[in-house]
Image (cartoon, rainbow, N blue to C red; front, side, top):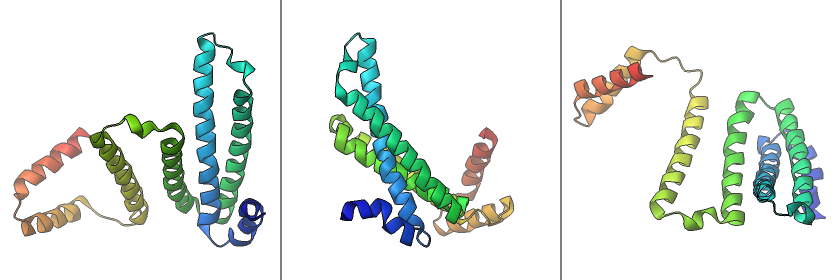
Length: 179
């Protein structure tokens, strides 16, 4: 009874005031949809190898889970977007969804058991960089900073740490021309 109240009782009462209710439900359900698609991908690969996968009930269970999870996910995402601002929902949903999918893949498919420690650290570092980048983009999106203000700040910071300002300016200039 308590498990079902997570999806049908509490969200209607608390979802109007707490953005995390709808987003966490949507993200958790999204992990099921991604896992179902991955399982169906494996089944399709085996079917292309002429194996009788369609005889196993797991394929039909995966299709059912996929349909239910995607429809529930869309429903709760629309509820979150109805109540809260899109610029707030999108980054939070992205981070929560990605976190639950990665966690689900680690548990269900044991993908990281074949990875070396350096690869795991690199993956987690990249994921953390994306999360921090999304936070910074949305936290400072209304801040107006000019190139001269940025370079002045960089000069102050790097002079404090005794770095060569001219070398860093050349690196920044090269980076800006490459983009």
